[in-house]
Every structure is written in structure tokens, then in C-alpha cells.
Image (cartoon, rainbow, N blue to C red):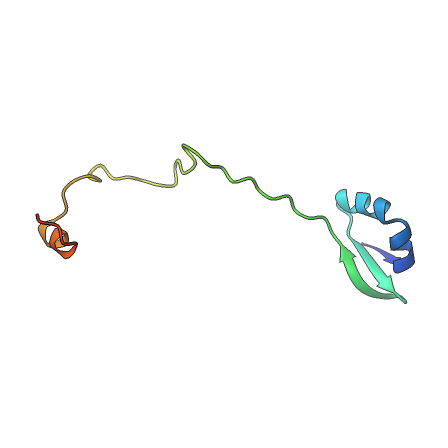
Length: 80
């Protein structure tokens, strides 16, 4: 981990950002005391949408569309 003072950070910000992009972590210090840290931002993961997005994660039973048992149907206000 590299430490630079505020003046050097302001002067060389573009170069420091390149280093951070390559995986380096940089501490910015004022009067020798650390006050901030430059680190790379993790890229946002793209969410997969559309048909097949939940493939292998959701299971639908074979009796999915079978009639409800009479007592459960009544609980939902459905005539069995």
C-alpha cells in the first residue's frame, strides 16, 4: 500500500487513479497522518433477465395445475 501526501495526490491524481485501476491501494495523508484511501470500485454485476434466467433455480412440480384439496379451496373462497 502506497502513501502520498495531499499535495502529491492533487498534482498526480490521474497517475494515482491509473495505479488504483491496476489493483494498487493508495493512502492519502495530511501531515503524515492517513486521512483517505483510494481503492478501485468493483464493477457492477450485470443481472441476467429474460427467458431462462431462473433455470435450475426454480422447480415446478408435475401436479402444479391440479385442483386444490376441498378444505384449501374453501379457505380461499373457491367452490370445490
